[in-house]
Amino acid sequence: MSENRPVTEHPDERTWIFDEGGVRFFLLTGDEKALLIDSGMKTRNAKEIAREYTDLPLFLLNTHADGDHTGSNAEFDRFYMHPAEGVNYYNKNGTKGDFDPVWDGDVLDLGSRPLQIIEIPGHTPGSIAVLDTVNRRLISGDPIQRNGHIFMFGPYRDMHAYRVSLKRLEGMTDRFDEIWPSHGDLPLPPSVIPALYEEAGRILRGEAEGKDTERFGNRITVYNTGTALFLCAPKEKDGEA
Image (cartoon, rainbow, N blue to C red):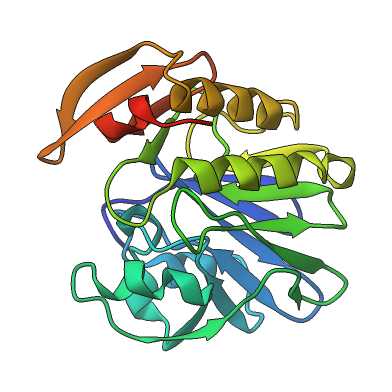
């Protein structure tokens, strides 16, 4: 077993949450199949770990291709991912492998447990959320957080698209009772979505006060707007909502 063993929570008989201390990934099972949603950051044996809890045919879906969500992808010959994320995935760390595309509105049915794909571009171009319709949960990846860090600097990220995605999700809140993000607090109420929308708007309009710093060799501006920390390119201060 890996030394970087994530902490495991088991909120119901068909769901497991794996927490590395900074990022989470999830195992969902149905009557016929099992699905890992993301594969960790430091973890390199997520498939092996999942096999401790299920012997059903096991598949992998990536909410997006940032490296803290793809740590165990090499264990899988194929995985599900939105095609717009290909540029993100294959340009990083020499990652290889083939993916099966998922599109907005697609349903992955695990057997009496349908999971609907919802496109939420902005944090990355191919970011998706997964709506666990039976349990009324939205597994949101990175765009929805409280007391976490939302990366909005560097290639492939766009604050305007992010707000459009938030507005769309706000119109779907009658379909889920709680949100399970990859970072920060869990669970979250649907009310966090309009809060993030308004805070992102203040950043774009230049109304939010930011702190200039560096991250991974990039000059960035960090905004603590009340719900989450937005890590933005400095030019975001001069945009318009």
